[in-house]
Length: 250
Image (tube, rainbow, N blue to C red; front, side, top):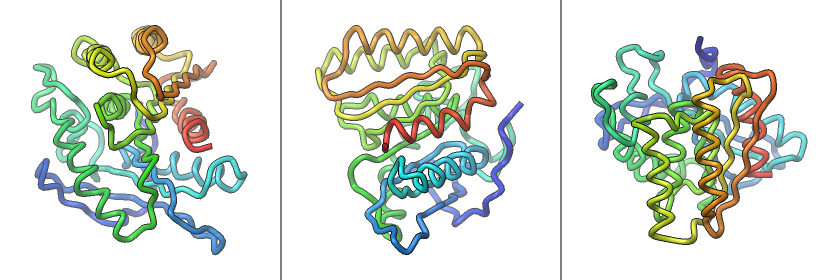
């Protein structure tokens, strides 16, 4: 089962020199005459599936005054999960695995997002230069966490929905722990959400990361975790996106 395919039309196609791939970019920007930038921006992974839910949540929350008017940018492939042209197994994974040929390209993809795509967006949209949000679900959330646990993260507001911490024997836990060994502070905000009906592995791995961050907290990093009763890995997305945006931008 996968989330419904995004119905919004792409805004443009962006070529990445870093990965050699063309990405389909979706954009939802504040349209109210009273809305003035600079705006916070959310880059959401798996834009071919998650853009509509994320943009809808941002619009509703802004209309209710719970978050400021926000630009939502979906980064997609124009191709479904497991299909040729969809490189999430390469782009969202920090380390290589023999089970996923070509995996381990997260750093190159992050270099594209921060060094090429963000400046391209900022040339045409009034974006805040602080408080940049990256959002994802499942494997996309693995990338979100990898992006956050850097010495000076470009994306310092992280929305991780049902993160795939299991990847490569939970190497993400080692990344976070190793960073904490090297530095005491990490300024930012982290929201993690999961459905209580998700798999024991997903729930257990998230609990391990939560416990690690509580046991050895980073100075300046605010962490919020929510578990949604009655929801599984797939139908939790609208809830985690809305709650995560509220926690990060509210």
